[in-house]
Length: 122
Image 1 (cartoon, rainbow, N blue to C red):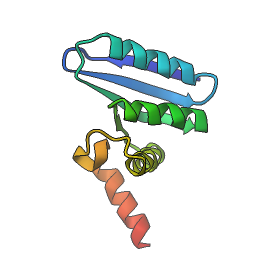
Image 2: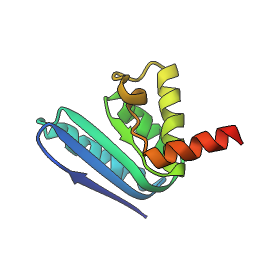
Image 3: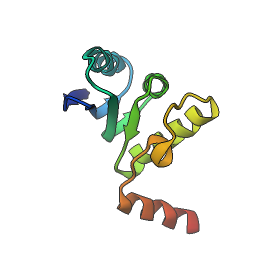
Image 4: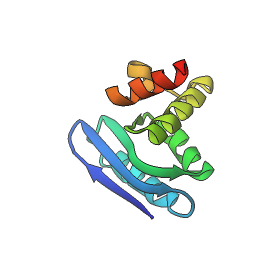
């Protein structure tokens, strides 16, 4: 099950994604993305994947298109941060990223960064 909530207004909108981002629910995220884009007044759209539990290849493809369209992905948690990092690296290789700020658009929680560093050392 997937839940997408559009938050905020004005200069920034957030698409909060919860649950499994997998076929056939991916169209729900794509619809919310288009709605946020067509609202017109948002300068930046953030896709918060912190509460995502699974992403299939169809979901990854949709997120790659959003990255190419200027979306900023955010994540908190080991799984979602791993997926976002992997997608951002793919996007960098394909030159799909418009904004290279803050780790190519990824926001990391301080605790998750510590966990990843520990994993790399061990």
